[in-house]
Image (cartoon, rainbow, N blue to C red; front, side, top):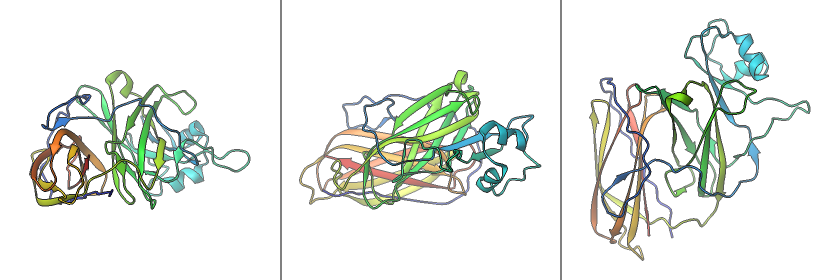
Length: 307
C-alpha cells in the first residue's frame, strides 16, 4: 500500500472576467466519465481529540470601528492588532477581512474548539455570486508526519459574536487521504438568504490520523499540459496506474484548486470517475476550473486512485 499525491503548478496572468460557478451537485455516477462533485455534508464521523482554537474572521461593514469590533468579540485591542499586523486601526475599510484572535478565559487559557492539532486551516475566503449567494473556500494542510483520513470541515456564519450560527455547512474533504505535508481545498456554498451574515468560523471537526488508512494506488504521470482560460485554467493529464499495483483502480479523485498571486484559493473543481482502470494502461483526464473572483496565477492538482 502506498500514498501518492501530485502537485502541479503553473504561473501566468490572465485577463479578469466574470464567471458563473456551477451550483452544488451531489455525485452519483456508475460510468468512467468524470462527474462533477462537491463535498458531501453531514456524514457519520469519528471525533478527534486535542482541540485547539477555531479560526474566525470578520468582514468590516459600514459604521464599524476598531473599538466596536474589540467589544463585539470580547478580545483585547493588542491581540486584535497582533492578529492583523498590516491593518491600521484608525483606517478601516468596508469589505476588509479581519482575523479574530481566540478569547482568553479568566484562567488565562484559550477557549477550545474541536479542531485537531494535526491539521491546519489556512485563511478562509468567501466570494459573493451574481445571484446573491456566496462560496467560502479554505485550504486544509496536514503538517504532521502521518496521513490523515475521514476529515470533515465545518463552515459557520454568525450575525454577531454572541449568537448561535445562522447557517452551518459541514463538508468532507474531497480526497480520501491527506498525506503528510499535503493540502487541498474545502468549500461550502451559502444561498442568498444565508449569505448576508459576515462572521465566518471554520473548524476541522473530525479526522483520523493513521499510518494505514484507505489504500491509495501509485500513479505515474506520462504527460501534463495546462492553459489559461478567459476566467480560469484547464489542465490535461495523461497518467497510468503503476504497473506494479496488485489490483486495478476503480475510482479516481481529481481536485484542481486555483490560486492567486498570494497563494490564496480563488476557485476549484472536483471530479470523480468510476470504472476499471487496469495497471499500466494509459488514461487521459482534462479538468478545468473558473475563478470566483480575481485572476488565478497558479494551480494545484491532486490525483488519487483507489482500488
